[in-house]
Length: 273
Image 1: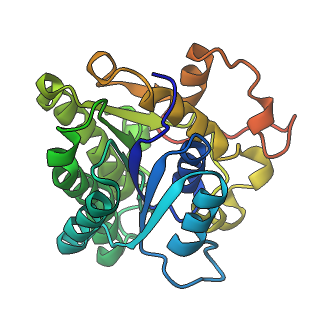
Image 2 (image 1 turned 180 degrees about the vertical axis):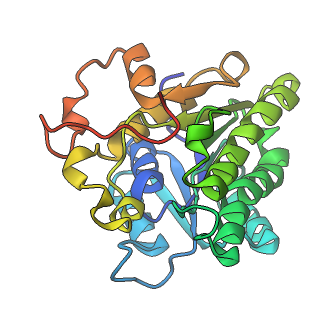
Image 3 (image 1 turned 90 degrees about the vertical axis):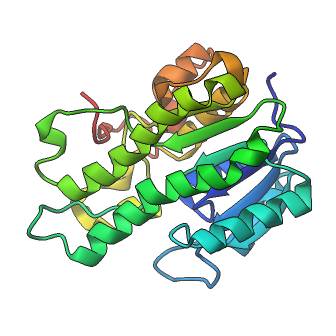
C-alpha cells in the first residue's frame, strides 16, 4: 500500500502547522480528512481555522469535514468521531497531533498551564484513541499516529520544563501501551518526532527564542507521516520514528528542500541526543 486514496483520516489540531501539512499531504492523494480543532474564528495571532483548513484540503484534491472540537471535552470528542463516521462511513487513521506547550520551570508554571498541557497532550490522546477504537477495528489498514518523542528518562529533558515533558511523554506512553494492546487487532500505533525544530505557529509564540530560518517546514513531518501511514499495519507498530530516518528509509536523501532557509544551521528539537 502506497497511497491514502479513499482513506479517512481524523487529525486533531489540523487547522494549522504540522496537522494541516499532514492533512494536505493526504488530500493530494484523494483522502477524506476530518479537521478536528478548536479554531473556528480567525485569530490574528494564530493563522488558520477549521474552515480554512477544510477548504485547503478540498483544493488539494481531498474531501474534508470541519469539526469544531476541544480535545479536552470528552463529549465533543464523541461528537466529532460520530460526525466523521456519519460523513465518510468509518475511520481508517487517527493522527493525535493536538498539543499544548509551556517551556518553563516548576515555579513559573501556573496550574492552568499544567492542566492544559496534560489535558490536551496525554488525556486528549488517550480519549481520542479510545473513541476511535471501535471504528479502527473495522478498517482495512488501521493506524494511530502520535506526534510524540521517543521515551526518555534523561533529567536534562525534565529540569527546565518538567510539566511539559511529563505531558508530552504521556503521549509516548500511550504508544508503548496501545501498540502492544492493539497488536492482535492489527491496529498500528506509532510515534513520529522531528529531528529539528519545525516552523509552526507554536514556535512563533516563543518569540525570539527560535528563529524560523533555523527551522524546517512542516512538510517534512507530513511526508514522513505519509510513509508510516501507508505501511501494513500488522507489520509496522510500536515505533518511535524520527522524520529524517523515516524519509531515508523511503529513499529520500535530499532534505534541504524542507529547510525554511536552505543552507542555514538547523536547531535540534527537544528530547533528542
